[in-house]
Length: 454
Ligand code: ATP
Ligand code: MG
Image (tube, rainbow, N blue to C red):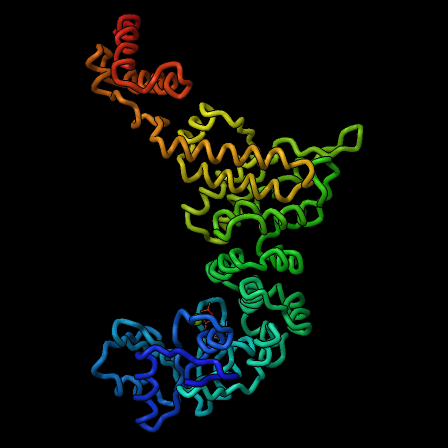
C-alpha cells in the first residue's frame, strides 16, 4: 500500500482488522501518534495506537468476541487483543492538566479528530493516517519530521505548563532521533523547566533512561544542562567546573559529555559516566603550580550518585551497580593476570567488564595525547580477562578444586576457620604460587592442618 511520499506502510493484520471493524460500523478510525511518526521516519513502530470517533462502550461492543482490557476505560481507551497483540483504541478526546500522574486529571470526548490531535505534545506525534496512507496532519508534523524538527503543537509555553513532562519528552526525542528542537519550543523548554518540579520522579526516570541511550545524548547534555540541574541540582557545580590539569583538555561538564558519548548505549554505563566526576567540585584543590587536584573524588561521587539515583527512583540493581562503578572508576589496574583475577573475584565478570567500559569512556574524555597508553593498557586488561574466563581459570572459591569438605577432612574443625582456609588457598592460587590442582591443594591443606591447632 502506498503511504506518504510513496512510502509503503507495513501495517499488521491485527491493526488493519481493528480499523476495518470500526469503519465498517460507520465510525472514523485512524492509526495515530508514535506509530505514524515512526512509519514516516522509516522505522518499525513498537506499538500501534488507534483513535476513533466511536465511544468506548461502542468500541467494546464491536469487539465483544475478542479479549478486551478495560484498564484505560476512564480515559477513553479500550485495549483489544488480536492474535495476542494488544491494540489501544482511544476515543477522540481533549484532556485536562496532568497533575503528576501518568494520565491527565480528566478527559472529555470530542467528535472531531483535529481536536484530538491538538492535545498531543509535538507536531510529529499529532499525525493520523488511514489504512491507505492518507494522512491527517493539521499541524505540519510530516514536514517537521522531514526537517528533523521537534515543535510543540500550539503555544509552547502553554503546552509545557499543562504537563511539565513534555520538557523531558522534547529532550528525549531530540536525543534519540537526533532531531533539533525548534527555536520557540527550545526557548520554552528552558523557560518552563521548573514545571518538572511537579512531575513524578518515576515519569522523569522513564524519559531519562531513553534519553541517555540516545545517539545525540551529548548534544542534549551540552544544550540543556539547566533542565538536568532541575531534577539533579548536584550537577550544577560540575557544569561550571574548570580543571587545570595536564590530563584534562576540557572543563568538568564537557569532559563528562565526551565520556558519556564514548560509553556504550546502555543505561547503567551512561549513568555511571554521567555521574563519575560529580564529586569533583567538592574535592578540588589547587597546588602551588596552579594545577588542580581532586583527591578522594570517587568516594564523594559515589555518595552523591547514590543520592541522585534514589531521588529519581531508580531500581536498586541499577543504582547499586552505578554507585559501584562510580566508586571504582579511578582505580589503577596493572595489566597482570593475578591482579585481574583478583578484580574478577572482587566484582564478578559482569561488573568488571563494565568497569573497564567506564574507564575507557572516562579516558576518551581526556587529553588524547595523554591517554593513548592508558587506552592500550585497558585493551590488554580486557583481553587478559577474556582469556581468564575462556580458559575457565580459577578466580573464585567455587572454582577451587577443593571445597569445605576437603578442608574438614584434612582436620580443620568445622566453622569459620574452614572459610578462612579456603580463602587462603584461593589467594595462593590467584597469585600462582600453587596450581589449582586437587593434589597440590590437598598437600598444602595437610601442611596447614598439621600447623594449625584444632
Ligand atoms: P514512544 O515511541 O516512546 O512510544 P510515543 O510518542 O508513542 O513514543 P507514548 O507515550 O506511547 O509516546 O504516547 C503516545 C502518543 O500520545 C504520543 O505520540 C502523543 O501523541 C501522545 N502523548 C503522549 N504523552 C503525551 C504528553 N505528555 N502530552 C501530550 N501528548 C502526549
Ligand atoms: Mg508509543
